[in-house]
Amino acid sequence: HSERMLSKAIGLTNLDVAMFDLEDGVPPQQKQEARETVVTFLAKEPGGPRRFVRVNAVQSTWLVPDLKAVIRPGLDGLVLPKVEDPDEVRLVSRILDEREPSAGLAPGSVQLVAAIESARGLMDARAIAASSTRVIGLVFGGEDFGLDIGLPTKREGEARELLYARSAFVVAAASARVQSIDGVWPDFRDADGLLEDAVQARRLGFTGKSTFHPNQIDTINEVFSPTAEDVAYATRVVDAFEEAQAAGQGSISLGGQLIDLPIVERARRVLRLHSALGSPRTR
Image (cartoon, rainbow, N blue to C red; front, top):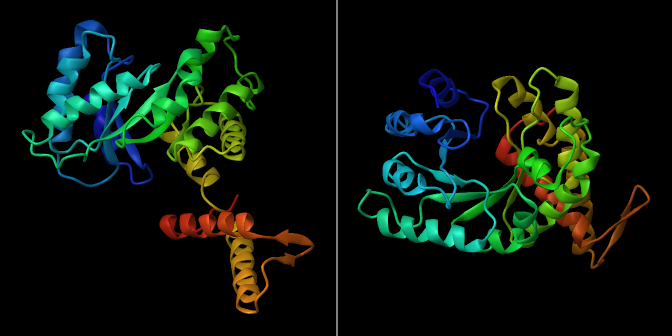
């Protein structure tokens, strides 16, 4: 929440969303000062990463003052921490419904990302994701989740101890048709661990990954962007399928692999992502 860090965040051209923190990163005695700092940065000229604010948990006494401060022009979305019940999301959504018009915001414009950080939250993740049309994604809080279920402090790159939880999380988000965002890799000096963790997250189906340090952004972007090989193969799949369709064939074989509609749709998804992101990654 420091001015130096926020200034750096909104100036990063390789970052999709800058999250201004009012929760765990802010001691209780500094909450009001942090709100004032965040408001200053929300008021700055648009441009750069989208601006989300992580407010305090619904159960806390700080949530309402947070919302009163930050629901204003410049706010793109809120991150709701430690969500365990869909009613928590509905409560915040109702407050947004009430406050957006008077704040000069278009109705429904502020988006929500719900953080799943406990066993109870994971068990209700699908309902949480589907609780409001404002919810665009879930983010997995691996460190808090590990604390909740009693995992060891040290994590390995593949985070095998979190394999079930991360897989269940992705399925819950996908079933509600929202983004699944992996949590942070906690050691910004461990580039190999970050790469291994990010690669596994992408293979599990996560659509993105959080970070707390700018040194990690390029690696994450590279992992979650299609490679040149991905794009070339997807193009061949789509072209071959469309040719087969024109010839009246329902499915085809390409390089010995059966190509049917689900594979074609995955290929089209790769091409859409490539089109949105620009040049393919090299790794």
